[in-house]
Amino acid sequence: MARGANKSLAALTTTEARKDLPNLARRVARQRKPGKSLMEKAIRIQPQGEERAAFLVSQVDLEEAERQLAELEDLLEDIELIDLLEERMGGGEGDPRGQPLSEVIQEFAQEGLLSDADVKAIEDVGSVSSLQ
Image 1 (cartoon, rainbow, N blue to C red):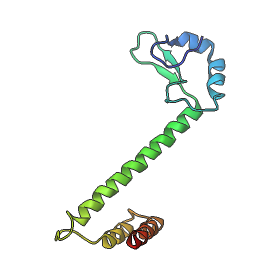
Image 2: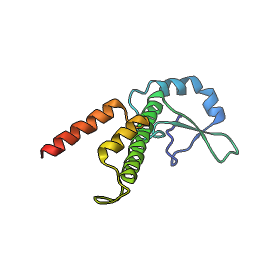
Image 3: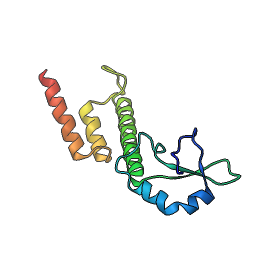
């Protein structure tokens, strides 16, 4: 009766979903592992006359989607920080606009862009790099 969110499968009508809601909710809630996508295991409910559908999604799928979103947000922040770092450091050696890396790192720390742990990690990498 209940089908996944795959568009090639028919959706449940709201009447079908209403009649079987306790079983549908139980089935979705019992999922232990997230699907490969947020909608892979979701149940599609298509109200009559509507272009779009609603979906019943498991907690594990939502939590996985939130975890992946947080990872992407962290990655974007890192990319933005790298861009800002490159901008502050200038175009390279001899560029009068550029600041030394150590100064930029300290500025970022003072501005709250880097935590103390981040600064220490950067300093540790820098000391290892200078040994090579």
